Length: 304
Length: 321
Image (cartoon, rainbow over all chains, first blue to last red; front, side, top):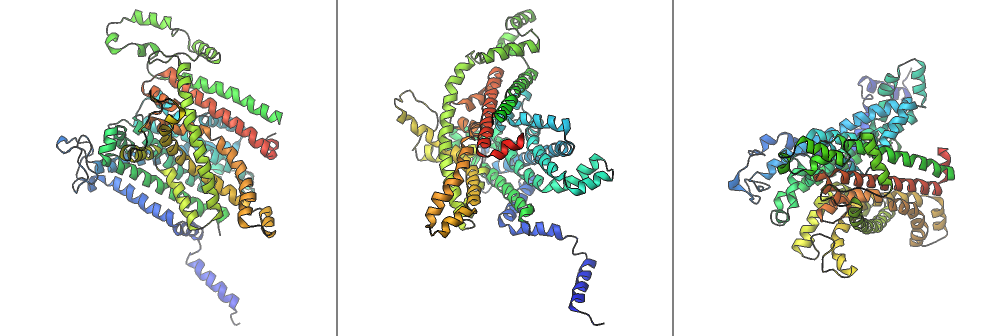
């Protein structure tokens, strides 16, 4: 029997299936869509460069970010000191690199941890409903009744300043948004047929909501994590600028900017605050680009 | 409609009560009490424990936590906000001085950001996908990415220090006589704040306008042979902007929260810089009163938004019942 064109097509499909080029198809569509977004790729590259630079800070700079050197204070940028030196002779470029470690750690860490808390509560409460959901909803409403910066400042005044406290405060103020997002997704997924099928199989609630439903809610959550990373980095910078964030002896981007409150430094020594402000802006912008790219590439209504 | 408003009000007051209790007990947990903050370090070594206890009794600090909360709450409701620990100034007096300054700044910023945000948003919707649209979107993202205080500092350096067009900060000077004298002071802080707020308004106006432009009455207007600008302005613009303006008008809580750091940068004597000062000085009565005032404003604003959206869109109130 001669092979028809349809047979040939089937052979091709079979061949491709054997090579397993189908299995990654869904992922590759999201990735390729993300890679087509020029801003998102640009953001990802700069984001990676800044993170790598702060991780390998000791290799990139011969200076110690904390060491005071009064002989070389307030020097303008030069070949030796790329971003100049500050009022106690510390190399600003080195401090920006080391400050990035703490600032990014706070931003990313708080975003991920508040996502973990928000999702853990939101998935279960959204799926189960009942009194847990009512309580969680009311508690999140309480946190959302404050303007964000006011709540953070209030909690700082209660707990006092430290790196650990700041992250705890960020998680406390940040979980509510994530909880509401996860809960809303769960409420709509709950009525899907596959969930009813799982329930009739007798699977436990935990398995259903964390193993089978959560992956379907993951893409808006990922987008939200990037956006809250950006927000936390900005909040940390603002708080430390006011002198109310991370204690001043730890270099963070906000703490480096703190000196700009002095009008003399603002006027005469631009390198002490200008470059670091620019680095924060660029980094947060890149995070926002990535978030936007993720949203566009994972949004099912734009899939095709 | 009345039942819907009643439902919202029933949530409103218990919420305020619970939050006030939480804030009160939170500050109770913080180290030290009012008496320990009143005594200067030099005095602390000479004062005896009995004297401290006598002081605590005089201020009513030996009563139980619940009693003190109740006393505080009832006097608060009667309009007696108590006294600031720094200098013993009546908190109500501080409020009367600082709230108008913040309102002034926020209103001007709101005005500029609404006009700018709406017009840019509409422009970018009309030219969807063009270079203008893309660069406005990127500019909007830059607007939410630059730390507001950094932007403020650059503006100070540029317009106040280098060009000397505008004052560095402050609100009132002794020699100011008319309202016109005060305008140079408000230009920088309000514009910086407005530019930071514009991004959100722009994004909202853009999507609302795109939404309207896709509707059938726009096609009808076009098919009647109406000039494009008339379709856009008279039909599209008007319909698209009503919800936007209502929502932007009630972004006030976001604005007064956002103005906190800007007030500090420009030495604007508003409620935000007062709050920062009270946090720095651990002036707990003031911290508590100001943060509760913010909560009151946010809850009131969200109540008004709920009622307004229910008025505009009947589905909201029917769905909830």
